[in-house]
Amino acid sequence: MTITTTKSAYLKGIADGAPFILVIIPFAALFGLLATEAGLSVIEALSFSVVVIAGAAQFTALQLMQEQAPTVIVLCSALAVNLRMAMYSASLTPWIGGAPLWQRALAAYLTVDQSYVIAMAQYEKAPKMTIPQRMGYFFGAVTPIVPLWYFFTFIGAYLGAQVPDGLALDFAIPITFLAMIAPMFRTVAHVVAAFVAVVVSLFATGIPYSLGVIVAGMIGMMAGAEVERRMKRRAGGPT
Amino acid sequence: MIDKTTLWIVIIGLGLGSFFLRFVFTGLVGNRAMPEWLLRHLRYTAVAVLPALVAPQVVWPNATGCEFDPARLAAATVTLAVGVLTKNVIGAILSGAATLYGLLYLLG
Image 1 (cartoon, each protein chain N blue to C red):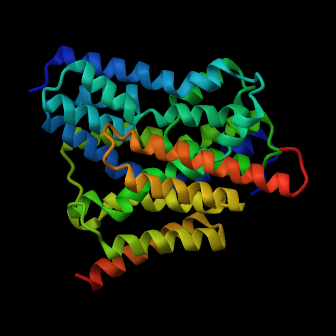
Image 2 (image 1 turned 90 degrees about the vertical axis):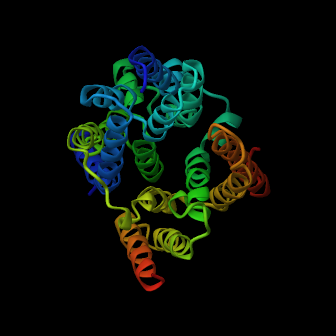
């Protein structure tokens, strides 16, 4: 499907976001279930998902509150888990920074790992898209994802819906992210960035508050940027 | 039992804080030009951060008590390989899932 209008961009976004439905449903239901087990009402669990929409940070906050950690610690730890969102925001800026403020604010609220990776893959693949098309695509990508995050938090909290253990659903997130990332390896620099980030992340698992992923990501980005700079210099271009 | 005041402080604080993190660049920088060295680094954000996010779960999955699991490693490898070769996201997801369930079944 080629994108010629804002509407076709929106529709393509929906199509590309659809595979993530399978990931969102079990995790939203699990959050709802754990939240009610921790003593939250259905409304409180749902509010949590609507206000925050960030899987890993919500699980972290819930866990720490159950352990009666000080409120400041709960907030700082959960925000540290979400710190990569600032990196996503920076990397989206060259693509959507020219959109109207209200659209950027709405997109910011809707920035999650899934919408970010879907959007970046498309923006890099089709760099000629206009800004309205890029925004349409972004909002399309979240259309099948975010409402289900709300709805299945509610279902999990209300019905106490259990996700069966045997399904190995813990692995739905790695598989969907890897599948999204794979087509983005367009140059040696991309491969080096990913490889370095993976190696560092494995050594950095001891760093608390999920900050290892930030350290690994930054070192991977530096590696990719450096390879790009050297390749350009070798090709005789400006450095 | 979680104190209700604490809970709402956390929900609202985490909501505002997360929004700030998500909005800090798209909102405050907007369409102002960013330096070339920064743009060069940002081109690698997705391919660095997301693999770093999932790598520990691939090698030491929480679900297996952080024990190395050949089925999960094979599934991740197949997903990535199919994705790189075919550039087909759905094909890569299905191949990875088939590998995971196939090996979990065979290895019992």
